[in-house]
Each structure stands twice: as structure tokens, then as C-alpha cells.
Length: 126
Image (cartoon, rainbow, N blue to C red; front, side, top):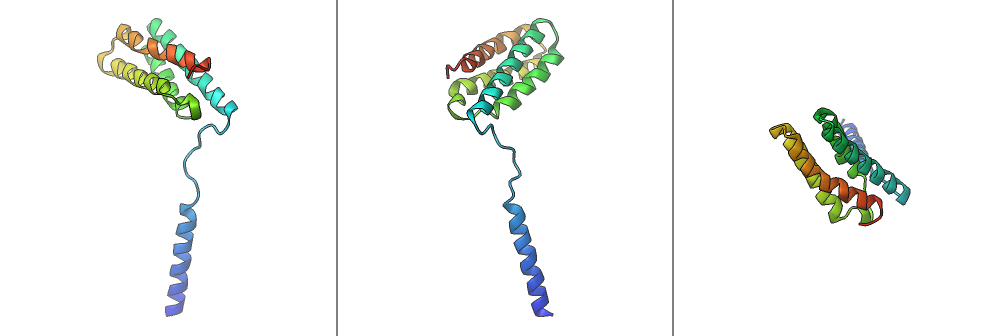
């Protein structure tokens, strides 16, 4: 009986350790083509968000801004520069302005530099 409980305990611990080694997070783009794809998606979504804001469609802009934040998480390497970080901060601030202040004009002013920075990153100017 004692040996059986030790064996069961050992099997359970081994199983838990094996489960702990299985990766459970998503991976960023793993090659330059993947990074380029996500740079393009990020920049295109930011441009679309700015167009939506300029058209007075704040709800649609928020959807695109969420896409920008998600896509930018996949950008790695040299492209993940301080310029990208600042663009993300501007996107976050734009989302805050839209949710708290509901001021499209101020949101456009906050987002425009981010769109320009993302365009530069898209052009290879990190």
C-alpha cells in the first residue's frame, strides 16, 4: 500500500512537471517576413483608425486602435525600437481620450504622430 501511494504520487508529480514545460503563450513573429507582416498590419490599422476618427467614427477607430496594440506585440528585433514604444504610448493615450473625454479632435492630435512613426518604421526607419 505504501509503495502504491508513492508510485501514484511520483506519477502525479511527473505529470505536473511535464504539463509545466508545454508552452502556453503565443510566439512573436519568428522571421523577418513575419515581422514585416506585423509592421504592415500595425501601420495600416493605425492609418485606418486615424481615417475613422477624421470621419467622426470613434467606435470604429477604437477597434482599429485595439488591433494596433495587438499587432505591435508581434514586432520583434530592431523594429521593436523606442519609436514603436512611443507610437504605442500615443495609441494608448488616444484610446484614453476617446473613452474618457470623448474628444475626436484631441484624439486625432494624439494619434497623428503615432501614425507618422509607424509609417517610418514601415519604411525601415527604425
